[in-house]
Length: 422
Image 1 (tube, rainbow, N blue to C red):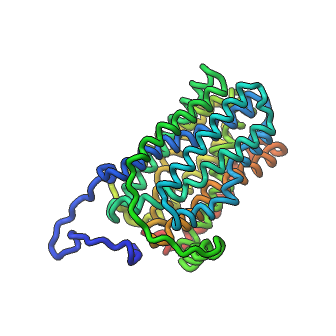
Image 2 (cartoon, helix red, strand yellow):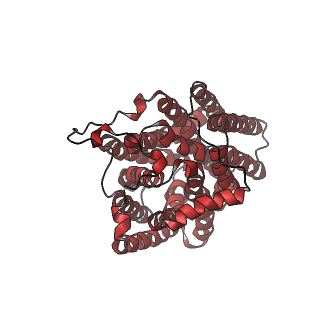
Image 3 (spheres, rainbow, N blue to C red):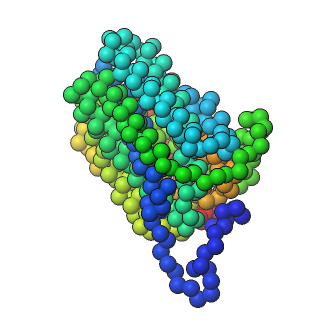
């Protein structure tokens, strides 16, 4: 593994004759534990948010997959304009303060949306506006969270820490849509938004005692210059460049097909309530939890690049089959297998990027990472929604996943260096 010079740690196990000692669990580090606890609340809201906005449009406003895709696009639109700035700010300013301010703002948007629904004025245009504001408050914290992980744990704890963080994301996939659906059934759509506001408030409590290590801020130059420095780092590293291209592909095809279009597929082609997709996301989350736990226990693993690509192949294959299903129950084993692959996909791609990026560039590179992972998904959802209106939702899902599978298989066969990347 290539180690940036400023991340090298004194490792007693490197001394001659020293026995290998398992690294200390990352959750035993107090500050990482506080960040992780806050992230659980944040990720639950992030996944509930996408689900509830889609549910509101499909069942509350009685619109179709085109409007659903438009709202999800609005939710992710700010990422296209703000995420690179957020990466620069993560390297320039106090990271803890950024988290506090963005989470307070996100809670305010959830409260305003709940009040809007209660007033009976929740038209599609108002929901689009709420989605844009919600996406803006959420996206600014993403690069900060990612940049803080390697700053709060030791080098030999990194992949375990990322796996533990993936478990937080998993909990959000299971708990977010399911609890939001239960709350929404009991208290209406406005109740689902009040639930998100409350959870964000609880998450803020863990930030009160968070101690963030000082980092040398980058010189205040134009945002574009600082962003280009991160772009050059990725572009000049052949393996990182290829990895980012594969992530871009997934962000436009498989990710939106599963996380967004699947909900419309459940309603329009399988004849179910759009809210029934919550159970599918929960089963997927269980699969991610299992594979993330495996990575957490094993810690450092060889040939992480190969594991990432195999996981991407498996996910694309499952998505192809999802688009061919004719009954709701047929989706359960497919989303479970998708989740098993997802744990490796999430952990390996983020770990590889962070392990091969120096800390002074971490915020900006993770900003690029968030752009392709989060910012591109709404674009993909919008494109898939438009295509699906003409060619069918299932067909669109399968074709998009087929394109992804063909590209990653070709890359896997032809790029041995990426397979061996650690």
